[in-house]
Image: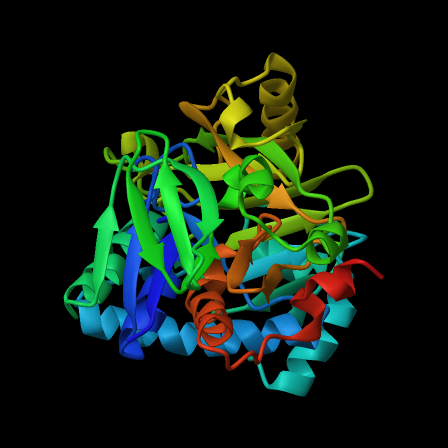
Amino acid sequence: MTEHIVIGAGLAGAATARALADRGENVTVLEQHTPATALGSSHGSARILRFAYPQRLYVDLVVASRALWADIEQAAGVELITATGAVDHGEVRHVSELAAVFDTVGIEHEVLSSAEATARWPQMRFDTEVLWHPAAGVIDAETAVTAMLDLAVATDRVRVLEDWTVAEVGRRSGGGFRVTSASGGAVDADTVIVAAGGFLPALLPHLGLPEGFRAALPRFDVRQEQAFHFPYRNADDSGQPAAAWPTFIHKSGEIFTYGLPGGRDAGFSGLKLAEFNGGRVIPSALDQDGRITPEMRERMTDYVRQHLPGLAPEPYAETTCLFTNTPSEDFLIDSADGVVLVSACSGHGAKFAPMIGELAADLATGQGRVPEEFRAAHHAR
């Protein structure tokens, strides 16, 4: 029976382990901290699940992923997605283009004038047309990681090793791999799947990738993003708002923001707000410092004053998280000589986790039905 190693126990790694286990494969998951660690990209309880993309490829993948999320919820007996609906607006969000893709795929939606949208969501301000689609929601990322790993481990084909820092991926003379740890441990396998998120740039020199494949890989920019939690006005004692809030993406010519109900993050109900790709670029996740800048705090507070009258313009919590970006913001899912790379989700990968796991499992088992847009060769063009 084939043995696989998955490096990283975030959303992508957990989904890959579950997908392989469901195919009868044996898996060892190596995690240098703990699953869904706060030092990675899969911590917390609030990630946007949206269908709005200008490329049909991604919309189709969201549709497929949403069905898989439902399967995971049923199998695990937990709710992972809270329905909120989503609004998209702003002069460079290109609402009509997004709506045209929805028409083609068959996603329920409405295009509203700014006045209509303001009447429906008086807690927000709009100055362009608004796209609304009710199927969107919020993913509890941390619980999702736990659920997928629990389901995988329950098959007796998967084990998870925590506090296991990969030092080197070496090739055995008889075939396959030996992965060694910084403390001298070793695990053998036939394939290695690297789902290390922001830690990937630091790992790349130690993966033994073929020179040509390595040269075709895109640049990976790891950004330390800053997110802020703002309280709702007219909320109850637990912070719950009087009116429901959708998730949103606002893309004007001056700023690109996203917001969503913050789940249980920060221990109080509020709205999580951030500027997309507003953080500083760092070499890898090893270089994060968790620092919140006064400039970004003021920028987001000013944004609330101007655009979100339903929030009090004083953040009650703030945090950092990591994006690992390619120049095109397309994913990288590809393989070479038994090593599968699953990373660089460019800040929009959480919703796709179940399908990312399936695609990685396809590569690891030799099925290889990954879209060309995610291959290294496509990124190199």
